[in-house]
Length: 106
Image (cartoon, rainbow, N blue to C red; front, side, top):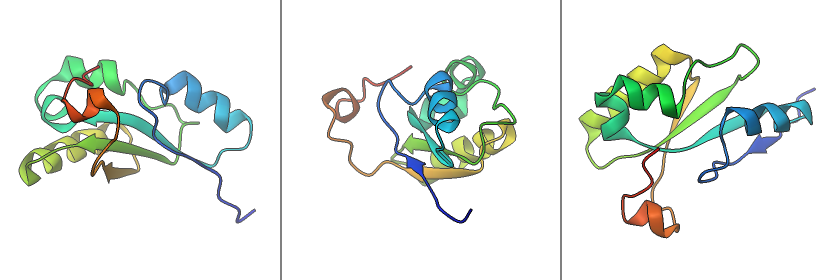
């Protein structure tokens, strides 16, 4: 089928278990919740907590980042790619207070 059913990124909701659930009900493209690019690029433990191992059934998968430096975003994107992500999305203004204040750190 050429139909595309997309699950948008949702703060504290778009984790691996939720992505598996929506994929089981026909979702064909999933986004992660928003991750902080600076921490994702710098910390292996943050990467593991945030994304973990990407299952074979969790594709295509778009990882969403909040970033304010191009080089940091690039570093985070390359780490996500190495972990199995298919694409990267840039959050350009999440209305959630915790995201605006930079407190949405997993």
